[in-house]
Amino acid sequence: MGHAPEGNTTGLGDFLRSRRSRVTPQQAGLPPSAGRRRTTGLRREEVAILAGVSIEYYRRLEQGKQQRPSPAVLEAIARVLELTDDERRHLAALGRRPATAPPGAVSRTLRDDVRRMPDIAHPYPACVLSRSSDLLAANGPALRLFPGIEDWPEPERNTARYAFVHPTARELYANWDDVAHGVVAHLRGAVVAYPGASDIREIVEELTERSAEFAALWQRYDVRTRTNGHKVYRHPTVGGMTLTYEAFDVARSDGQRFVVYQAPPGTADHEAMLRLSA
Image (cartoon, rainbow, N blue to C red):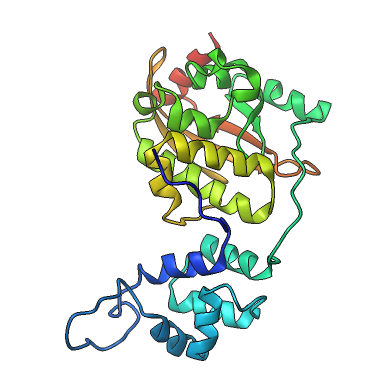
């Protein structure tokens, strides 16, 4: 059984510790030190000095005792920790986040025009996902893109749950490791974007309990905005194919995303994708 999520899932200190453990002194431009280092990555005081803040101030940041650091301080720390653009945005959101936040409302309601969007995209697989990756609407090709998901009751159809729990997923995704990292990184960002949201907390807790792989990835604190990418399939019905996807935020929807899969016309991938409509 995996470890339960940490008490403060969106903790600034937890994120900073995870990032500095991945930056070596050599990467940060520090001279080699004599003797054996007990710290993996950079020490707190090294980050503080390189970022131009006091050691005590940085220590308080990691301990969660220093609230609302300035954007300039966070940018200096981000530079030292060599954060990606997604990680910089995540760090800024953590810095703005209050110590406590009211529970976020759960919304599974779709506007009629949004519900029609997957059918308009036919024969391309298309679906609408909630902020916690619940499958709210899908056309036929999209449902067949997730073999076996229709066997689940509609409220349980969730693409994050599918990736880690459904027995078909490991064989379906030839690049399962990348898909899994993307799922976890999206949820890690979502808990900050929607503080207190019970739907996000519940899917994280469920997958932590049900999947050791999810629990391990969750502890890495990786963050990635999933707006596009590709997935490599070994589909049991239409065979192997590589599809790209684009995710679009749905206006006034509390985090819903419209996702469309595609492949270049005239390719074997495109022909395989079209067979999902048969």
